[in-house]
Image 1 (cartoon, rainbow, N blue to C red):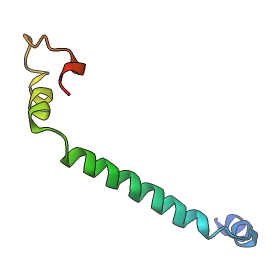
Image 2: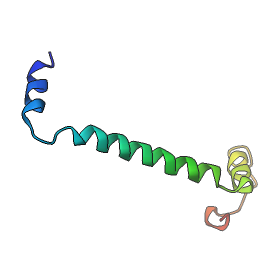
Image 3: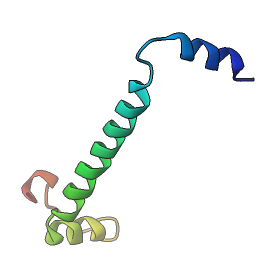
Image 4: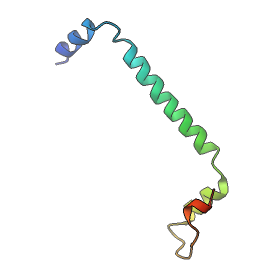
Length: 65
């Protein structure tokens, strides 16, 4: 099933760099996302977690920074 695709990919010079670049992009994305999550303020996370249950919350989102 993948033989025509495999043959076409094998004939392209420098095609081996694309899987490496893809892995690097995804790794960097999740690394930055993980750093962002672990450095986020715990107070803000607490406010966000109670927002769906709290009907009296009148704070705008941009004032929580």
